[in-house]
Image (cartoon, rainbow, N blue to C red; front, side):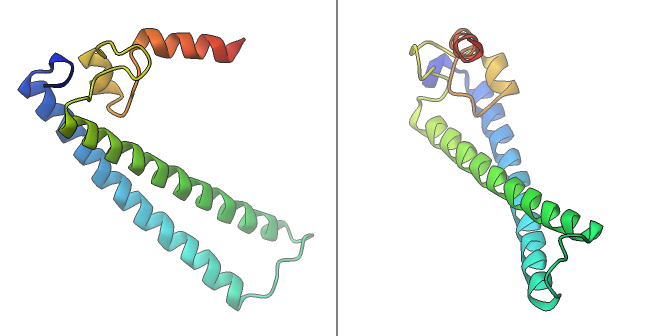
Length: 128
């Protein structure tokens, strides 16, 4: 069993990941519909006037929605990867040092791949 995790911890993590995956799929569906609406609207409405105060907000909303959709898809990939690691029994093993990731960290951030020590070191390096 990966990282010495109990069956109870493993079940709780799987439940968290599965619920988060379902929520993310719903978010992707909703954002995809929003993007489709922007595309349909742009095909039927005349081009935006760059001096129109509403035109700028429509373009901004379309870009923001597209970015949110990309982020949700990336998060779904992280969730799928975490579920695969859980099945392979290498879930809860730090990808940097090979040590055990604390169950508390996994419960808070179930897609994490690093222990607190390695995550802090990476953040410290990024701040330099």
